[in-house]
Amino acid sequence: MQAMKLSPEIATLIPYKPGKPIAETQREYGIQHVIKLASNENPLGTSPKVVQSLQKALTQQHRYPDPSFFELLEAVAKKWNVSKSRLSVGNGSNEIIDLLIRIFCEPGDQILTTDKAFVAYAVCAQAARVGRIHSPLAPGYKLDLQAMTKILLEDSRAERVRLVFIPNPNNPTGTYTPDSEVQKFLQQFGNDPNRLIVFDEAYTEYVRAKDYQSALSHMDKYSSVVVIRTLSKAYGLAGLRVGILAAQPEVIDYYNRVRNPFNVNDLAQVAAVAALQDDEFIRRSVENNSQGLDYFYSELKKMQIPFVESQANFVMFDTLREVSKVNEALLKRGVILRPVLNYGFKTEMRMSVGLPEENRTAIQALKEVFAEIKES
Image 1 (tube, rainbow, N blue to C red):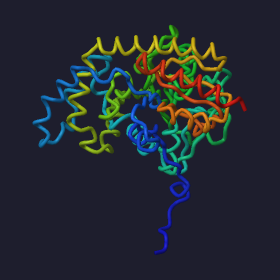
Image 2: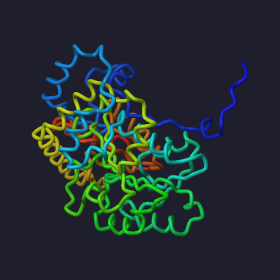
Image 3: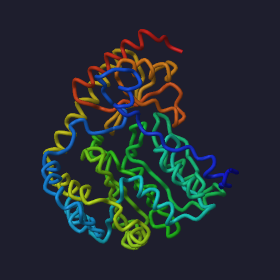
């Protein structure tokens, strides 16, 4: 059979590759005990309140979920002090990213984001036949809003930039953009009627920097500001897929026209409501993360391994070695970390914070592997 003709954008599309699953590692290497610190998941699991709510809701799964997210939007509005008219929900933040590009971009339009940012922006854009402009990172792997400003003002392609994605903090580097720089950028572009400034705040709960501020605080002043959050990280709902969109009511209106009416299932909605009400679980999650990051920093310094201080729940470090060899040696020891070759990094890896004993196991495995594999 002759192959169906596809557009170049689809034919050349490289899909997003998630972290290696535990079960696959067990099968492939014939080992039972595996720890996974590759996908920035919450090592504390899920709030007990979530589990209780899910158990109660199981008997109602013959009913369709609430397409208006009434209870969930009530909980989000109360938690974040944002009007319900400015909120909607997605099947994870990935769906929100995908839909924003489909809604506000036409084939031939452009998105602008930073180099070494979450690959879903580029994947979703290419699938929608939309161009991608990447601004370079500043020294220290930091997002450079001045470089973005220069592109928007001087690059001939900028006229067709419809969405600017600002991951804050950024994945996979863990770096952040101070609020003073964000405000300076918004003073120029925050009320532009021809484009949206999309802040991806997937890791905002973990930030320790004093000069960081959520872009939610700028929505009243700047009409183009859009904020995406997820409940997959600190809230521990990665398996249920819940993302939150905050934007001006007209943006929410268009989003709700395009999204599927039952895009977030009933159990996910129930779990999200319960998760948003458990402040103690978030407190413990953040505390575990802070302690884990400090432990990683201490141990990596002892090993003389360069790393990037993180405002998220992971740390990116330079193995100084061929990363595929390091990764293979770790997998044989039952430790799953995340090479970041797909971001253009050649020797770096990303390591999520786990439970204390998981963190110690990962560090010990790294020590053994670095002794076994010499620097490139």
